[in-house]
Image (tube, rainbow, N blue to C red; front, top):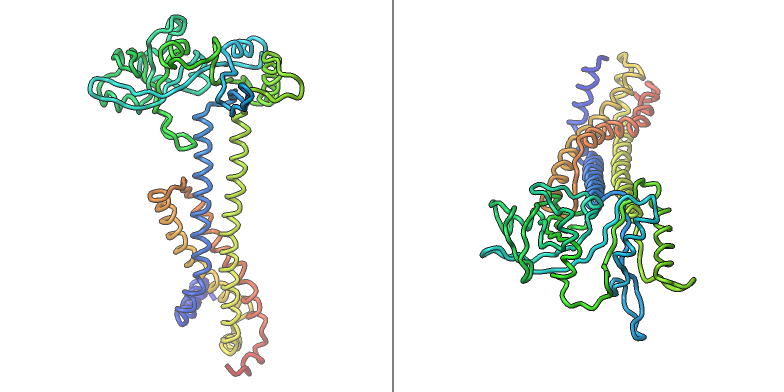
Length: 411
């Protein structure tokens, strides 16, 4: 028999039991659709993590205030001014693996320009802040050395702030009020978009650290030179853990913390946090893929079951075909063709449903989705392979029937 004869015979046999064939393909349809949707969600989540890493800055450590005691009352982490810009200077001077250091404070205020206003957060920073966080300027010169040293009332704004205060107008050189203090816009940051934790990274205002201390942070009681956080950029990623330990040791020495006593600071390794989240996402993707794979296996078992039933029902037909010259190979190819047509048809429908489902999740759902056409192609290959694998045993069984016994069978 030629290939065309084999396919034509297989199509004729399946058409005779079209409802059973359609129901048999349901398992493959569900499995393939699930594989495409689950893998697309997993890849989309991974892309969001990569975006988060880009937004946080590479090779970065963050130091924040820790817990402490005040008047016998325990103060929660981050609520005390336990860090100073002297700590930042010591880290820069004593740890050679450190490339950038930027101390800072933060707060929130209402911004006003003409009749427009916008409520956002501001940050008072040191020069290395922009390099650590990967910020680029879209417009203007940004904050200069003179701005930092003289506590100038200069400000760099994010794209969201620019749009809400100035619309399509030019922001450079304009005067805005942060709270009650007038500032001159000297730069606009290049847009970053949404961060890995869902925040708008472009909704930000940046001023020199000393300016923020004197003009924006109010009368908050704090030690001289106090800051809320210190960001550290390490030259090489492989040195992050070592630098983290060195910073912790240096800070304990500077803060005169006795051995065994609790630190009044926290050092966070952003890379470790991201790596943990990446590993968790990978495990979840594998679990989702396993669930989808199980659906595909169940669909394949359904194909095998129906094909075995079909062989039993068609024993006499097989005997007749063998008696007129069909060999075992012809019989085996016919049943394999039937199994593969069922799985391929189910795979085609499942691919369509999975692709549309992934696009629907991307548009209407809250999960990140990244549809990769390589995954779609792989799903189609998997559907054909499922028919080939699970259809082999029934096809083999049909080809090994004894022609005489088959002709004697009463169907």
